[in-house]
Length: 583
Image (cartoon, rainbow, N blue to C red):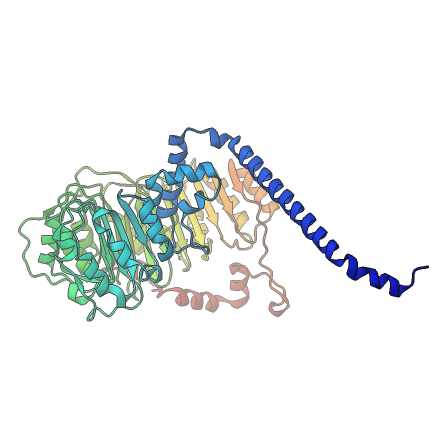
């Protein structure tokens, strides 16, 4: 038997040979692993080459890549770099060799500079070769690191959208004025944060050295400029908002600027301070190609002054975001619609958004609204949109029907109302009187349907005496049904059917205090009932005694004083009349 000491004597003699053997063997294994990895990479590459997209013609693959890059550039809402800072075009090159080769041979992919980080900019400019550039920097933090590099390429830029910090404005303007921009078609410049207009430079004739012959779109926000600048000639799109007092135009300056844009199609202005009317109207400025005009944060008097001086097509889309309105509504509509008896598009729908601070009214040519409410909607069917701040004299919902009466070519068939105010019976009675052709009512918001039901229950023995004699469709969304109101709605349907003016369609979406049994009763008297199956009660917890919290039960338990307090908390209610008066 070998002793332990003898075994230990062997280790030193064989140590060196064992180490050499292990190192040699490990080296062979590493080479085998590397060969296998290379073989696997080759097989993966071969497999990718067999995918369907790899067999596409190069022209089609290039078109797909270009579409992806354009979508990323123009559809991005934030304009901020991705977490890894890599542009889309660079990501494409890291998929496979084939894609990389295609991308590198397509300069167009590298010509879209959408908040490209400074460390990638030189590579993007090199790979874009000498083709025109699209530059969008919505993040002032990204822009300030590389605007010198970007604006050195000004002669080859086609689209330039920049957002700057106030303290960078003067340096950026210096670069913008250092070279001409012969290819520039769209220029957008905005200043982020609170601007100190007194220390910021102004956009003047020096910008682009006065040479931007292809410029057709200008958007300026939170900056100062001269209305005589070369950039305000021959435009098709002009958007100027939240400008400094030094840039605020007189009426004659504004009209003179617009005269230099005979092909103007889109006009957006922010006119919060009163325009100095330093000229008498001789002839109106013709804007024969105008498609839309939007006045943001505008006083009513400014809107009237401007519209009185313009001549544009009858189908122009108008959007107004007004300060509190006074007694000049009729003057506004007269200025907008100078020939109300002439030809024009038929207005078939009306939408109202009513809250304590703001009222909004929209008029459309279709019987439905395709988009959510916005004071300046993108929906081309909405020809007129007016939003205004409420004052004590105008916080009366029936004002929307007064406005409707001033709209020419109206045949309102659909009414959409979203309200957080309590709508009294007078609101719906005025609507019935002013909208005799109304076929559809949609009500949503935190208001209840009590007053509408009361008006629909009223009427004489003739169908012509019924409220809303043409009504055949109702839609309620996010409405709290009071106890017994589903049954009252059923009785209304029966009564109207007996007079030949029945309710044929009923849509119920996310309504509370509505259960399947009540809906089944409605289906017995209404041909088409579309209910989403939403069942949510209005029963209070232990703190409220566990009773029903619907408005009817609350009124019964709290008495009439509760309702009066609720009314006055939502808007200044005149107990004698809800009607709006211009006096």
